[in-house]
Length: 140
Image (tube, rainbow, N blue to C red):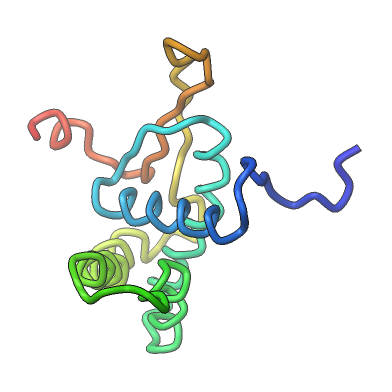
């Protein structure tokens, strides 16, 4: 029985899991769609939905919370590209995505199953925003 087991651990420590989902969420916001394993996509859905909801709020408090989820600079971090990347992602969340999903009450992402990965047969999936533009992605 899976009583009181709220999420998957992926055989990682909590800090590794948090960093993994922060990186995946930033990639999702930057690209609109990412390819990953199906269980990771289903867990990332929880993180991405919360980020978009906070982006729709648009408050300074929500902005600070998003920076916290995306993993602000750590104790040993050197200033560099990662902080600029986070700032770009937060700006996209609070401007572009908040505007796109203004009238939508939830369900901002979808998971599209792709089948097994060649090599280890891991189930693969796309996670994307529901208004993802396929033609623009193919042009890139």
